[in-house]
Length: 122
Length: 111
Image (cartoon, rainbow over all chains, first blue to last red; front, side, top):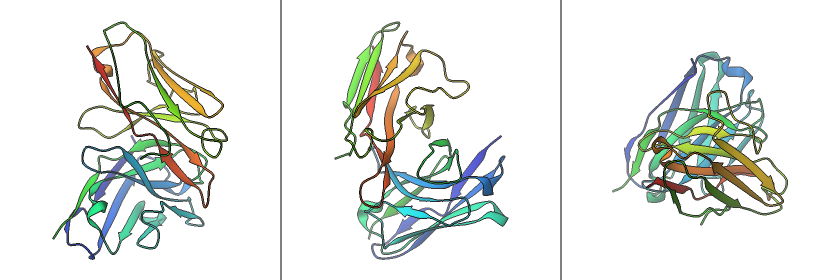
C-alpha cells in the first residue's frame, strides 16, 4: 500500500524558514517524480514544486521560486521542501504527491499524503 | 485567479447527471492532457480521471472525462450523495518554464 506521510509543518514568523519532509513507502520511490501541492485555508489547490526521479530536474511555481527548494533522498525514501523567507501567503496545508512517471512534467499525481499545515504569522 | 477556469459550484438531485467545465488555453489544455481530482470534505485530493478520459482502478464508471480544444469537462452520471465534494481539473502549462496548473475547483452539492 502506497503511503505518503508529511511532517515538519507548524507556526513560523514571516521571514523565517521551515523544512517539510515526506516519508514514502509501499512503492519503489526512486522510480517516480514527486511533488508538493498546497491548499490555503478554504481555497483551491496550487502546485508548488516538482522533482524528477533522480533529482535531475526540478520545477517551481513562480510564487515560491527563489525562496523554496525541493530535494529528495532516494536512499531514505524521502522528499523535502526547504521553505525560506516565508510570507503570510504561504500559509497552507502542504501535500506531498507521487507522480506516475519519472519526470515531473508529463504525468499526473496518483497518490497524495494527508498534508502538513504551515502557518506564517507574527 | 486560477489559470484554468471552473464554475465555483454545481448541483443536482440523486440520479441526475452533472457536468463540470474546465477552460484553459493553447499553452495548457490545448497541448496537454487533463486530469481531474476529487476532494471529499476534510480529506486529501484523490485522482479521479487522468489523460482526459481514463479512470484509475476503483473509480466508478459514473465518472467520465472529455477534452476538446482548450476545454475539458467532467461528467457525473447517476449522481449519488457520496459524490458531494470539490472537483479540480489540472494540466501542465508549457508557458515560460512550465508548471502544473489547477482550476479553482467546483463544489458539487447533491440536493
